[in-house]
Image 1: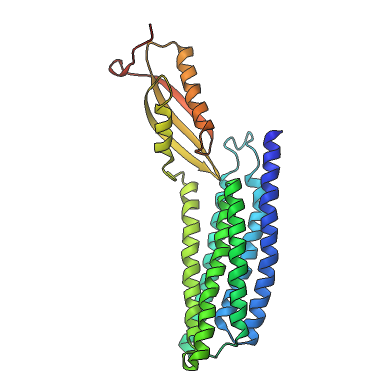
Image 2 (image 1 turned 135 degrees about the horizontal axis):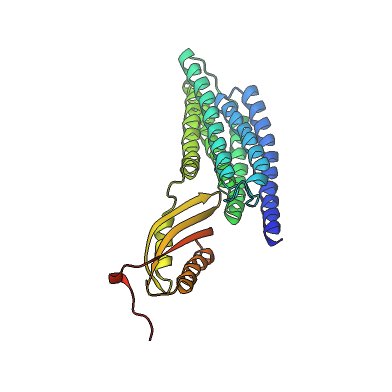
Length: 304
């Protein structure tokens, strides 16, 4: 019952902040799109498409959280945490698609020599976008870290990318008004926005890919070894493997104990190691500890 309550709280927190983000994204995308078209700002219109792409990832988070937060079952003994990595990877792929479309359109515009001076309202809309999306980024990231959700944090960085991508838009409007002959800067800034989005996509995708292939993440193995060595009765620690499942980790390790101990005593030490790992701040939710006899040269003195 306690687990179900925690799961429901996580789902509620993730959906609450994501629904708020969806509302902001719709408003900002419509505003940017309309002003970008009416006042001839190619960069602002490109940024509107970026804001619209946030809706796709918002939907992915809203629907995905119910699945990745579900408890382990017979078919998924390690839980459903990797679904969150898939959602995170989907967010990154969505960003790549958006970046490609924006960049290709801007490059075609530069090649054709088409350019126009954006209207000043485009500047104000860009500044509104920076402020609102930065606020949304901070709120979403705070919730993501509270519930340990990589997918929600990826979505937060998607909001941050939208905020930062609006800065070149504002610069383009100012430059085009001060130096009308440099109106082509608007298209150049659209390309910069696309490149920035690609960078954000990679920063989001890499950890998700590492999780999906069970790579070492965050130096957890070294921390697990250090903690296990400090447990009374442990002589040696080896074969440490730590896998990430969403916002949690699963550890698998071998510990050596004095060969003269009884099976029950060795088993107790193994439990002590497991309990220490689960009680630590490493985010480990399951630990499999294999107990082995230490070689004679490595044994410790038994208490008299």
